[in-house]
Amino acid sequence: MGIAGKILIVDDEQDALDNCRRILSRVPYDCLTECDPSRALEIIQRERPGLILTDLRMPQLDGIEVLAAAKRMDPSVQVVLLTAHATVQTAVTSMRYGAFDYITKPFTSSDLVQVARRAFGEDESTGAKQAGVTEVRPSVDHRRQGTRASCARVIGERPAMESVFSLIDKVAPTHSNVLVYGESGTGKELVARAIHDASLRADRPFIPVDCVSLPDTLLESELFGHEKGAFTGAHVSKPGLFEVAAGGTVFLDEVSGMSQTLQSRLLRVLQERQMRRVGGIRFLDVDVRVIAASNQDLEAACRRGEFREDLYYRLNVIPIVLPPLRSREGDIPILAQEFLRRFMKQQGAALGFVPNLDSTATELLCGYAWPGNVRELQNVIERAAVLADGPLITAAHLPERLRQVVVDEAGPGEAGSFKLAKQAAVTTFERSFLIELLKRNDGHMGRAAREAGVDRKTVERMVKKHGLRERF
Ligand SMILES: Nc1ncnc2c1ncn2[C@@H]1O[C@H](COP(=O)(O)OP(=O)(O)OP(=O)(O)O)[C@@H](O)[C@H]1O
Ligand SMILES: [Mg+2]
Picture 1: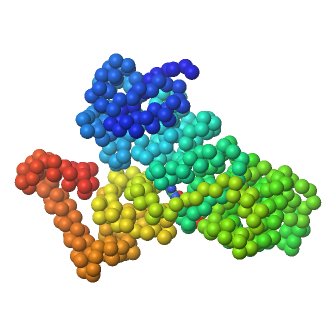
Picture 2 (picture 1 turned 90 degrees about the vertical axis):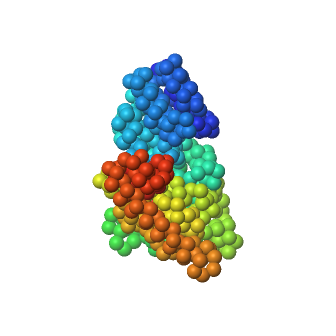
Picture 3 (picture 1 turned 45 degrees about the vertical axis):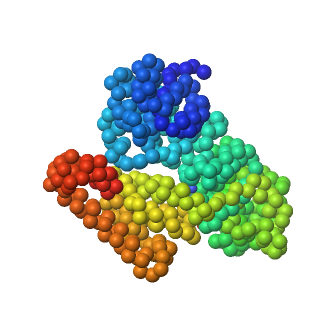
């Protein structure tokens, strides 16, 4: 491998360093790591890396300072900030100081690899900025190298989703059929797409088929196609989705909804890898991978005689079980923040900020049981972002059913609602007090702190909490 440059990774957490180093072993550059940002500056001076990846929040020296110092030493160095606190403010500030890009944590392997390649001018074709969790489909090269490109859009914090991610990685390069289990809204289709995107079939179609929304005969002709005159109304011949998906993946959603007749036909296709269109005589080769999904226990359906056991074994070569959102509470704030970011991006940069969730709102999100899982969370967040129309999302912007939870759990009767009302009132008071205070002091935090009789740090903390920095 021709080593064209060095990468320095700066992060105060050793685990994060090790992780980045492991991921970047897939690019042809030497990787240096340092957990002390002051020592990192010495390394920059001595080793002259071409790319620096630095954490934003570190106790001794923050990432922006590392960026500024590195640029002073070597204006040609590329610096990418890794930030868990994704705000437009951070990005704007880092860009102003000459950052090449920033990545929002949690990021995927492919985010990191792609940004490194672009920084070295290797991968210009990917073009668009890659901040945050990328939705750009990984290139074939990355897949061949087995990066975790598959999980580019599936968000989840280890270890809760770790086994899901590692199964996706293991199964993607194979041709095995996969059965994805999970309650409604847990991301079954997303996972199926991730497997397809990370597989060698990625350049071929991914075709989702809903097995419950169509009547039996229509579903049959959708899947297997029909010849002209096969039934009344079949004026022309039509290829089936198994043909259209040639070389790709067919995603059979709610597979338990298939009739016994269709189950038998599907079984034959999977066994023989050949099929005939409805009314056809010719055998056609079938080259598709089948990923099926179910929110019901298929084994139980087999015991009840509703689902063919032999088909079940064909489909269930690799089962992937998606945990419900309520059992991975840690993912809730991460998903919420990511959905906010995506929503604001869709709305354009007009608003200029990504709202933050205040602590009560975060608590309410984490305390709710989410019967509709990730899909329900996504809707709640979108609604809150619209209602908030500002940089802070509070309990007031969440649906009644979420607020109910804390009231119920907070203890008997009035105590819960009083606590909540008090919290909301204090937050509102704090915010408007702060805005007036800062206006009177032209946004000068030191002067504002003196007038209010608190120390500067308190004002800074409150400004951050209420997402006000942008305004002053
Ligand atoms: N881990 C995740 N990370 C990011 N987004 C997710 C995740 N899981 C689900 N989503 C999002 O939630 C929504 C629902 O996901 P999806 O349609 O894959 O769920 P499903 O299990 O197929 O639901 P259903 O059973 O109702 O068909 C989608 O918009 C998807 O992008
Ligand atoms: Mg689905």
